[in-house]
Length: 52
Image 1 (cartoon, rainbow, N blue to C red):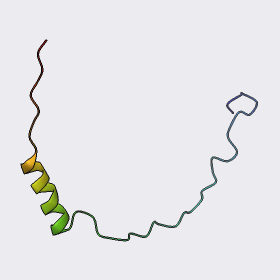
Image 2: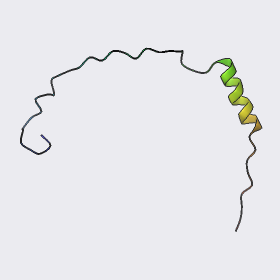
Image 3: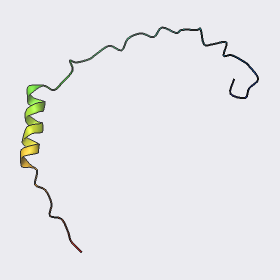
Image 4: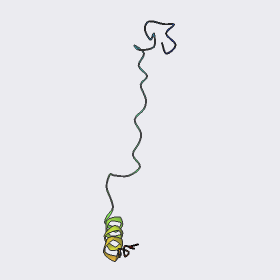
C-alpha cells in the first residue's frame, strides 16, 4: 500500500489477541513511597535566579 502497488491492505481484517500484562503491584504509591516524596518536596530549596 505504501508504494501504491496494492489498492487495499489485505492484513487489515486480521486481529491478533495479546495476553494482558500481569500487574506485579497495585497502582499508586505505598505509604512509605508517598512519605518519601512529600519529604523531598518539603526539603526542596529553589535556587536563586541569576541576572545578567
